[in-house]
Length: 131
Image (tube, rainbow, N blue to C red; front, side, top):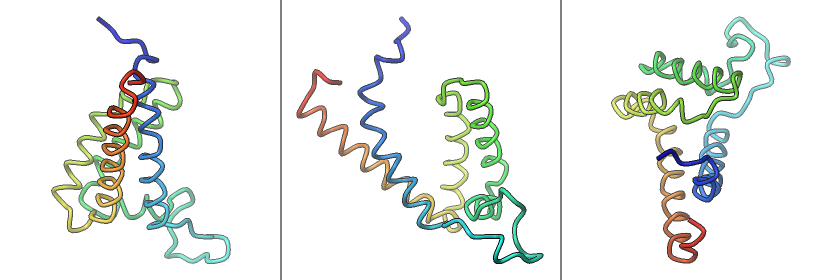
């Protein structure tokens, strides 16, 4: 039996605040730099923000690029983002294995997971019919 996309919608709605938390924490860690006013030979190429530079500076460059490529493909073809689950899992495993470098990112992701878990449990306790 195949579940329709709207079957999972209540769970996905609960996920949105958790994802937003992760994004906000990562953006706070890696604020975008105004490259126009700080141009130099040491600056990353255009389009390479601080997060991209950080992720490519560690041991998980290959798995990060695989996830990035998957996300671009999903957006271009309007496919389900769940198609990138394998690439995301591989990146998380790599970052866990190299947590000495990737700990700031891992902290943000784990905070988001904790927030999602709290919201999901709250929804299940308070409104089981919704989920």
